[in-house]
Length: 205
Image (cartoon, rainbow, N blue to C red; front, side, top):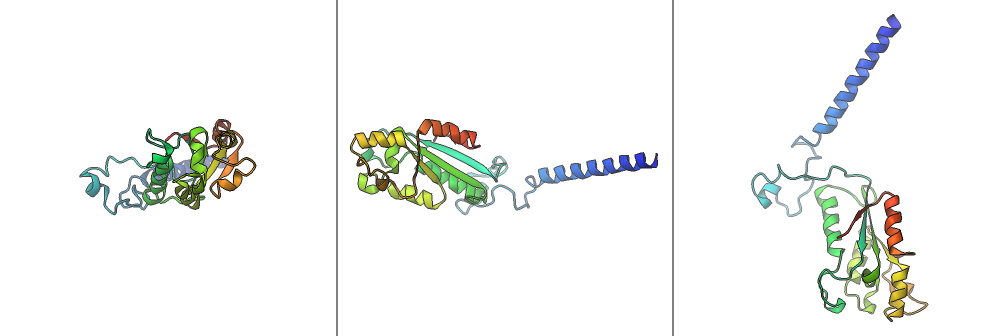
């Protein structure tokens, strides 16, 4: 009887500890003074109420998941606008990537490699975004900059074959003419599915 009584008391203690732990975990995002409060950082050095008006902070929903985030972007266009590649001023997906990184790092205090990973698969019309600037890609430096920030870029080999046929890349020497740090996947769409199997969340800009 004494053993049974001690067993019941032990269970009650463990249950109360779990309730306190869950309550603490919930309140850590509900306390305005806590360091986890959204936002962690300010994009324009203004509070949300200063930037957007009174009450803005209260109605702002921040990311709940701030660790082990895996994001996959499909870049299957060259330009955000319906113009020729040569006339393009807004590259497809690259601007979105900058904003994603700012939200992760500035607003939510996340670090690349530790809290988040971003992969980009470029195929079809997005393939030319992965070419060096000597191949008339005015956005090659932006791709390099994003690689420096930890973004992983993958070029579809089917898209590469198409660019060789069009004369955008030299046969037998295509790899030397893509942005340094860009890697290959054998096919863009199968790679999109494969990355999702690996736990990446797919986003189409």
